[in-house]
Length: 473
Image (cartoon, rainbow, N blue to C red; front, side, top):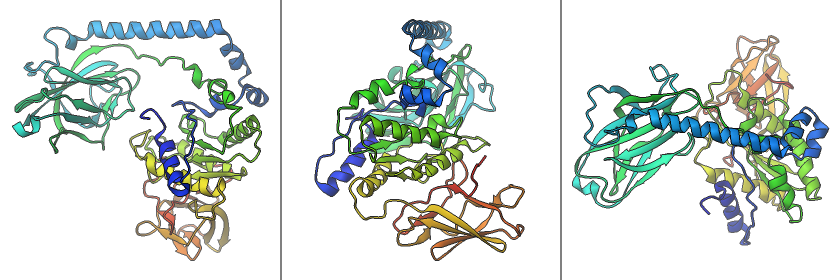
């Protein structure tokens, strides 16, 4: 169960509590995949552009050679790193009573950007001393170290207590009884940077919990470079390639009767978001043909908020592509811009996502007359220097979650958007700016991380981001 989809679990639990009938789910998911990986070869060839890649990846000898070369390259990189890492020689830098007079100061949590470590690829050791009372050393404990870029090996008092091979999983390590001791304790973390600038990701918890008490591990640490290497390029993930998982995970399910589909994907298409709606429409058609159900419900999650530092707003554009996909019949979208985490591609709140998708299912798949969506942009009308916006799915009425409406922007004929004043007037939102006399377009929550977006319906469901432009950039 721990390896099952948390969104799927909470989705099924919500439906079970409503209908008191067990809900069967088929878990077909691979992290990091673009939508093209879930399309059939037939559909992809109709679309064109990837025929050569499809042919190449059907060549077993090419695939085997590429995998072997990747494995050899990665094995060689890690062997050289281990051999050259001064921290793994005697005395090892994870040992308790290691002199650290020549180590440098580092504040945790923090990114390596702006420091001598910014462009480093290799291994860097970090150490932190902390003191515990005897009471906190009784029984098991837990170490929480936010998330770390990229990999880590973590020791307490010379004992390895946990390792994580890549950047996304939260570091939550169990500390067996007998490791901690009254007085001084030493935490050592070997951070491996493979491809990008390292970090102890900010706005995450860094603490130790023991015997119902906790101490913070934020603040001053010490570090020393163990080894410097070249960048390790990622392996070739053939499951990410066009049709890479369709044949293995979708085609074999043809003989099963499906009530609907939950779709939670899109992050891996944000590098090239334009055209996602077309691909999604093809996927829906593909899968409905697969199960011979032309009205098979598709319920999908819109991208959550994430601070990508992308000036081109690619996540916002992809959300708009997802919103436009609601034109496909028997589909519904759960908006999640208010339940993500600005610093985590994999936000922890899966329960809210599952429950919002369950609302969609109750209406689309079970014909229940409920409010299942937040406000969705419908149309705009210009009145003098103001734009009046109309919405579908306003439920019992439009409201703000807190204070005045935020994240609305307006532009004139120059297409230069600026922050606007927005006011709820009955079932509409009026948007204006005193310096724009002839407004042309409005957009809402148009950023990768629209944390301040606060337009909801009274049922508590957030409005989807949108733009009134036909072809946003």
